[in-house]
Figure 1 (cartoon, rainbow, N blue to C red):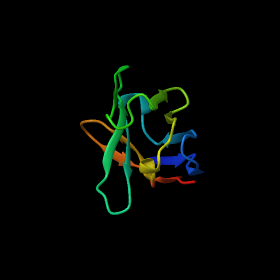
Figure 2 (cartoon, rainbow, N blue to C red):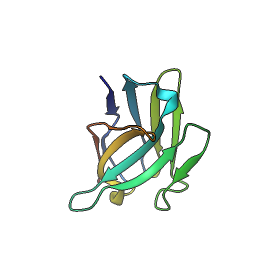
Figure 3 (cartoon, helix red, strand yellow):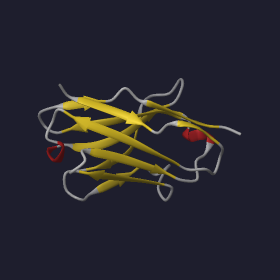
Figure 4 (cartoon, one colour):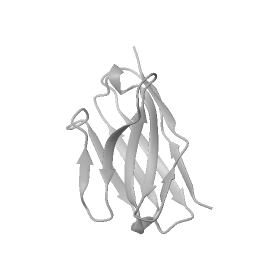
Length: 115
């Protein structure tokens, strides 16, 4: 059974940092690309960052310079380091593991940026 479990969300003030984690089990982690998405209330889900099976990364323009994505194939973990958080970063953040044969999602973790 494949599971993706996000953690690390919470309530922070603008300018603070959070690191989200995604624990993956039930699949060969190194064979999957990892993406982080987010969905704010009333908005569509949007891609935040991706890290492929090769050391290639993508960061959306709206997080470039503030967020970083990483993965640990031994621990089967993915991370999203979020710095200088803004109120607009408030959303549920989802971890996604995908390749040409399969696509798996976590349940999401809430990030709220508010003073």
